[in-house]
Length: 314
Image (cartoon, rainbow, N blue to C red; front, side, top):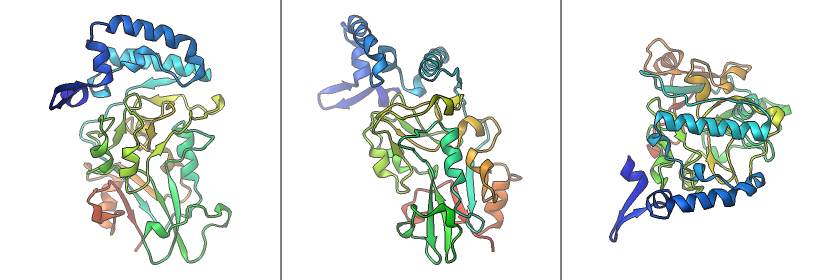
């Protein structure tokens, strides 16, 4: 992992990335000190980062002590900006767990409550509002996403002749977004969740272009999150506030699910359309659905092998 992230072999020899260069060149110490001094008066502008943050290692290379320092720094930053002291931690996968979700399209009424619960739980920008979940109003008789309408009137649902299909990150077993990231800022965790290190993302948007489900969102501007709306229950790889210039996405609310709770979208659903759980547990609700319902995945022909399933009541 280290040589994939920190060096690239070229015909002319190793090509260090910007962080390695700064760490290993003779002028590194003096340069970093100068950088920190230069950035200090600009922190309030919101578009600059500290030298410590700039030189931070990839998530997978952080030692326990490194992670403590990173969490402490981000906690202080959140408190300064939002006047809220967050409960920020690094929530790691549980052994013997692989998450999946299934959605009953017969029950979904297109109310979009899942969309807004997700926004609130995951500290997404309010202006413009970043939404991880898109609910498509689909004509009956087709599963072609291109024919879906996500700009329907929520006050008139459900409409005759239509069904409603929420679409979000499919947590693919073979994720194309991971393959195209040039700096490995996104990867698949052991529990199936496709994660993003927002401190390592360079904002190239290759992952956004590669996703066939339109599930990633790019922050063209600094996300606007009112202090009174901040959810202080945060995890490093999920719902901590994100900066301008990175791509973000659904993580199955890992700050909740890795601690034994349900995703926010499932808890708020008024019709019980969503099923979530551990597919390695034969007695779980999701295992029951996969065994007893005729499930399907979106764009199966692409070979992405989503961990997000759909079904109708028979």
